[in-house]
Image (tube, rainbow, N blue to C red):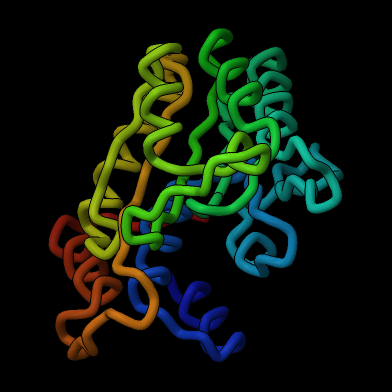
Length: 222
């Protein structure tokens, strides 16, 4: 969580809601897990978990120059599965942005029951992409819902500004993935930029998550 705050301050684009989403999801990563984010999103470098001693390549999936990023994430999850490792892959994405190959990647993950969790940050306010050729690779809730029903993959919708809710839903998805239950999509809905009301420090999501964890004596070992 401290890493999230430092990152947001450095980028001078502090958003308590997004900070909460990043903290409440990445907090579940352990050494040996892998993380992926869109190219140019510095959060991946900051939040990537520590690599295990035997892994020389680190824990960040660098797919910034590839079109089929989520397909590569699925391949990485398949590698962990084949190696008998207990690690998982966490990928960050944003609703409304192009993500070529996302259906193929998630379909593979579901069919092979791979340890893969996709967290989609949706601050679009429910807007859907225009029809046309570009609509196919764009992530939007309607397309994801149709796809998930077809392949029977869980899509968990959560208030992305409620860090405690995100933490609990993510905890369930991560446990399921680590135990061989397959992938899941966490669809985090947030207020569109420019419409979020200013919050008092005591009511900010990160602060509430810290209090929630402290009350339950939850400690982090990263």
